[in-house]
Image 1 (cartoon, rainbow, N blue to C red):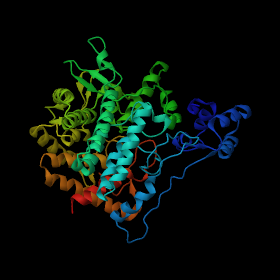
Image 2 (image 1 turned 90 degrees about the vertical axis):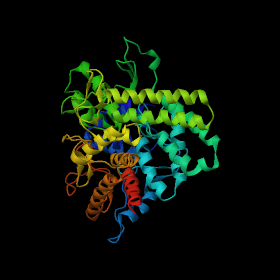
Image 3 (image 1 turned 180 degrees about the vertical axis):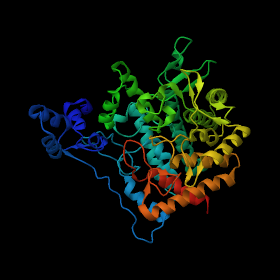
Image 4 (image 1 turned 135 degrees about the horizontal axis):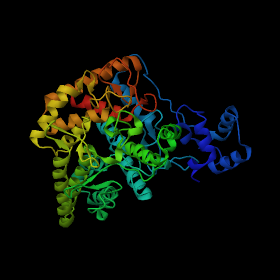
Length: 498
């Protein structure tokens, strides 16, 4: 059954029995959700204490606790090495919960995130590669391919309530990592062929409806036809309803809007979750969440990753001697690169920015999304120098690079810094030979991590890079311990600075 539409689910979430709405969205029914919901309909209405007791009787919850520092002599590097087993999950067996069972083992981020996450897993993979655990990376890749075959896209995470949206497309990055580390030297074209099928499927998902676009219809789902005829992409969600994992919050915020605007609000909130940047001033018309307009925005990072997907498909088809498809995807990549240059680079600011296709204006929000064109090597040398200079003068803080230059209550803004964005910048700088600047970013990040570890005895999901002695804030939940992508990127920085 679709339990998120049940009276029980609605009543529990609105009663705020759990401070985090995701807790009940992940609950495991002792018998089945259907039987619990049927029983609830017979005994309701219940007071909040009675409802709390009902939930306790009929549901169990997975522990989200992780170990902290083992001893005072532990280093950050030993902590990371010792934490991987705690974040490891064996292949799933089906249970009465929102979990989409996976056939292979996987790594979870940690804390409230007890499922695999799509784009997180690439950054986690960096740390696994550092310890030679290519098998775990390959298992996660296999899970993503299987999820895509079952679900129609690689979902945000392996939860049923995530199935209508994806995340930044990093499948090509994971394929390339494994191909280079394991299969390329043996010319295992059978493995590569299977992966290329999956990469094409992902590309089809993002480009779905492109053939429908014309002068009257400029957008469909995740693809947008620009004024010059070029195709670029946006984030989207096929559902326009409150998020089950944030039901109470979404209903509250939507109640502040006229009823006719609420479905659009839900869609835009969900689309921002697909971006991984949930939430940021990048998506806001004004400095409040109810002004969110994610689906109007053509994001520079998304289109850079899709450029990489097109480029890699062209490369892999060349390896597989499929000249027609090689030429097709090379042409698609060239066209996208030209469109990125036209719409997503500001000559006035000397920086890559997002573009609002409804207003036909470039965004004034400067963010670390600008590093992704460098990361995928689609920026010109001149553009790369301009971006590097802006990052080092305006974004570099004592703890690394700040996410945007806007200080807001959203977690993907100043003063917060996030590990994956540090990696995009550092690797992007290496692509263009800015090694000394990359070393400064890594040094600042690692120094902050070392100092924070002395106090927290663990690694965290995000950090206040502006004032590293203060805890990062913002967002819908408290800072999470773990943390998969922080572990992976920090591990890689240690390796690069040896």
